[in-house]
Image (tube, rainbow, N blue to C red; front, side):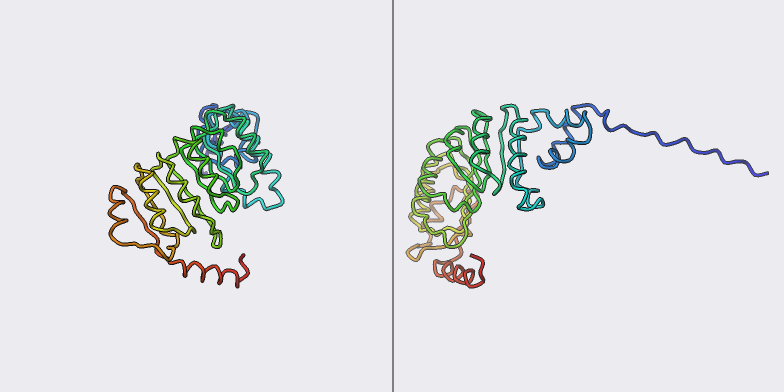
Amino acid sequence: MEPVPVPEPPAEMRDWSELPLDALSVVFTKLGAVEVLIGAGLVCHSWLDAAKVPELWRTVDMAVLYRDMGSKNLGILTAMGKRAVKRSNWQLEVFKGRDFITNQLLKYVRRRSPCCLKSLHLESFTKLITKSPLLEDLVLNYCQSIRGDVYATVGEACPRLKRLEVRRRLGWWDDDDMLLTIAAMHGLRRLTLEGVRVRSRELTAIVDGCPRLELLDVSECFLRRDIVVDGALPAKCASIKTLKLPLFSDVDAAAAATAADDDGIF
């Protein structure tokens, strides 16, 4: 008679809701704000408690997953942004968002982070910048309404600014004031410009006005016809560790803009 096999003991069931609060909070830091607000934080009461720990919301990044939600949910994303900022409990240091941002949300960010905000990544912009004296990191992607006077305000209101990235689409040519006012941001260490027309005198002003620059990337900008890129400018930039000068001419920019218009992009 064959021996009767002994059944294996049932696998131990793990109750994930009993994980310590600090362990859950560490896991949640690996997720985005949207994932926590509409996913992990809704699993159970203990996970919701972990999702409300203020340290988790010092950085609020809503610039990645929002596109998957569709344009009809922009109002929901705005409300979620407000909820995330509220959970920071006045400790917000970094905020990243895109075109769902409203003036009301930015005002709320300003009220809830009067002294802590250090990094702001937006595709819209208001006077919030004047209320953020500790700002060190500013990235502006395709913000059509921002002009030179705004950058002058940034230079005055944010003396600790170390990184500035500005990207524009073809055809936004009101750049003279912008480039010259960037030269007043004396503490800048990293500057990236894209889609901007530049002259050698403007680049020279920036290099002279920002002696701490470690990176100057204007490789995706366009040379104005009167620019002279000889040995003088690179020599002046000798102390900059990473230097990328423009590769395209003013004529190239006009041709590209015309082609884009013909294709119906703009």
